[in-house]
Image (tube, rainbow, N blue to C red; front, side):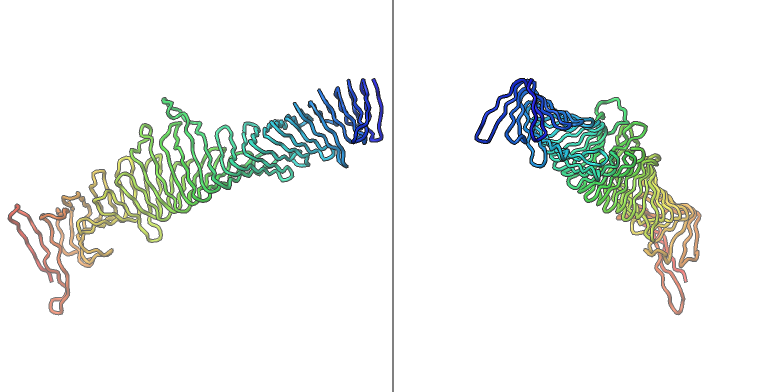
Length: 529
């Protein structure tokens, strides 16, 4: 064993020493059990070349380096010093310390700056996280994790059942911020987050906020469903838009804000059964969570969508289309709210109002008058719209009720304190008014406590009283009025009204028209002064 020291404070020992002169200066070759030491750094190998200035050497074959708590093994190692000590390692590179394990085809290690760059099939194991990439640059920091890094080309990070993928990933430990560039992915047990670029803000290793700035998509797996058929085993809620911001509190999902061309496909689950699929879009959508479970959806700006029931599990038997400037879905209470220029269409029934709500537990739809704007409902394409201060509609029985309602049938107008519409399109009203005057407060009308309107047939009223300018004129205990347009039909003839200096207020031609058959009829008219 030969041992010696040099001016550079490196000491060497080996079984054999060969020295020769070259054009670049003196060269020393150490062979067999080579040990090179300086301060706390030890290098061990079977062959080494030492250059004349002793600030550059090469090691070959089964190399091991110990530098404080760092251990490096490789097949080939180059050391050079130019104010800063540097090492380049090749072949089966393995670098370890208390917190990290790095494997790669080659590695650059700046000993003074505690900076490491791994090249080719690079692998990093940091505490409970792993990372693979074509290149990994690791720099010691005084932040929470103790290291910042920059990884390039097919980067994959596994961290506590969370997978992060991207073409390039930056992490700055001093501010706990990560940037994932090009085809970025974040995948956990139930969620897949996709985007061109993703930015993550951490707080003490826990995710605080995620920003996806381009082509964002969130796929959220549904896990609390049970079905006899395997058809529904892979249900996924989908969220997309121009950009998405995701907020976490105490490492739990708190809010997802979709900004610009927001879209959502959401599966409605009740008692572990799929009741339907709700698809909605708008300028922005906010999803609120409670204990990682979706609790509310808020749509703003041109919200529109449709609900498709799962027919075998839902009492709803048709698709519901809806629109409103603002839409809120309270999932905890299973209620939808629609604000401003709202419209809901279910089968042939269409409702327009500035405020509407649907209780999905009872399948009841309610709408209310807002800022003097009454809700309007049309029950089929043939019927005229009905207005009222409040409108209630049962989606299952298809029975509706209107408070302080108004509608038009066959050029006649009907008002009612309470109007009920059944599933046969018959209309019932209490304290009803029938008139041909189109004013909100008509000059003349027939009033009845109870009135039934049968489409394209007749109106039954009991009793009925003629009013002129609010004054009762004549009454009948029972009346049947025509309600069929375009044909000869029996019924009351509404009078004309006027005023003269001789007779005062009058009305002419109040009467009744009766069709006897296709060829004969009877008409009775009367005048009142």
